[in-house]
Length: 499
Image 1 (cartoon, rainbow, N blue to C red):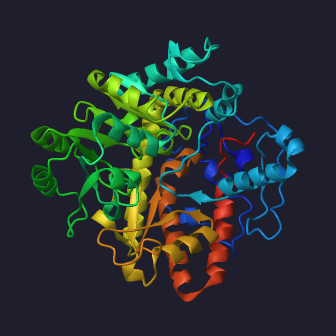
Image 2: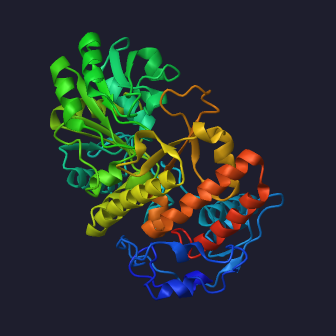
Image 3: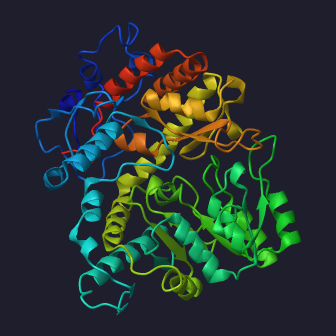
């Protein structure tokens, strides 16, 4: 395998020296690549990607074995190291096979879903530990169950690491995910029927910021701000005018499809003027903030909501960060207001991820995520794609396919068939239906974790362009060709969770 020839330093991200690039391409089928490997045409650069390794992972030396995809699957047969699940394989071979199928799918795909990443093996181990056996209703030192001698120090570690990493006075690490965390904010600071304000979902906001189909839009009176039609960016003058007219109890800033820097000081000034609680939802950009690649809301937003996966590279969980004055209200809203006992295995995995994010090398990772996104955006523009806001300041790119004569849904499905995983997404002022919108959304957090760098981005842009064009005319041969190229490229980049 190509990955056996790569140089592994100190984590699950693998880098090749400049001289190893040719080695990586050994055995490449020139017909498959149309006569030349696409990396041959990439800009000259140091192929030791700009991400320093962070978690100390190394290959176990286990000999890889061939994995046969399930009958009827379109997954290619690839040789990979398998996840260590021997007990599951005995207890439930059918489920074990599905887990291996998912591992192979992740390994052999270019994963560009902006809300996804790869966690370290240490995070995986904590997530699957004996901590799942323990119930721990309440908070440290104030539990409703005995036997918390170990659990309390684990939660304390997670809380202290969150406070130190983000520079906040209080952290609650118990929310099960981002949506419950946001709902806890409502319980802490608003009454049913109060006015809340957030970015409109079709403009890049989130369901839980008061959208009508969410409980937050049913129980509370929701008003929504948008973006400018000419720039695709949030207009703070509009936000201020709306806030002055509606006097919301809570103002949310942040969302799910915002490719530009969020003006936290601007939002804070508006919230102060109308007496609202400003909540910064940083779920997508938490890792970038932790790594210094995006401005922090700390000091501007007294309440911060975030998930712990995405760019933070942790498990599927969430945190609420706040000033000390809001600590009691938030804690009571999470428990007993909304949840029962926390998921202790997730709390431990969050603690691990926060420790990893505090390492100096994580700053390099965060900045590399942004560098990759900007390079990919530039390459897509050169290919004629229309990007919402014209580019990106973070990990996220939103493409408007209106000029390509194809909707986001068929484009996303064709790209998935080609091994390039992203999601269809509405764009601002979209005239198409939510289940068949005009755009696709992509992000660079996961591919940066695998070790891809700016030199790979023109290659990815070319594949995206080829597949979108092929989808318009039904050119399945091109989609198959790109699938094969993606499989070859990803084979050179090991992923955590494989021995």
